[in-house]
Every structure is written in C-alpha cells, then in structure tokens.
Length: 49
Image 1 (cartoon, one colour):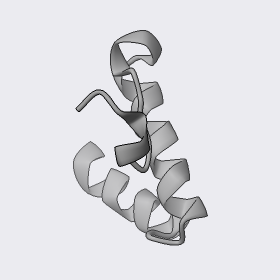
Image 2 (tube, helix red, strand yellow):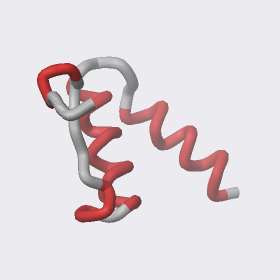
Image 3 (cartoon, rainbow, N blue to C red):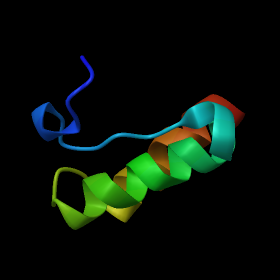
Image 4 (cartoon, helix red, strand yellow):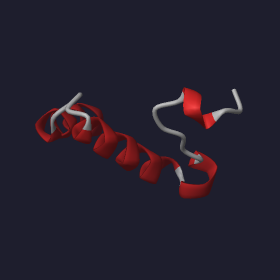
C-alpha cells in the first residue's frame, strides 16, 4: 500500500478537497483517453438534475 510505484495516480483528497480531486481525476481520464469531456458533461447533467 505504501509504494506509489504500484499506482497509476496518487491523490491526497484531504489536502486538495473532494471537488478538486474529482477535477484532477477527470483530467487524468481525459489525458489517458479513457473518457471524453462530453461524457463528463453528460454525467454531470444527470447528477445535477
């Protein structure tokens, strides 16, 4: 658990906050081409309605 080499990304959500953590993860997924910005917008719309 303590070796960061074993992870794709490490993130201290306590330090940056939940909303910023979500943004960082979304950007990572976009960079890795695992999700599109349009998909993120679509999913946000579902949860905000």
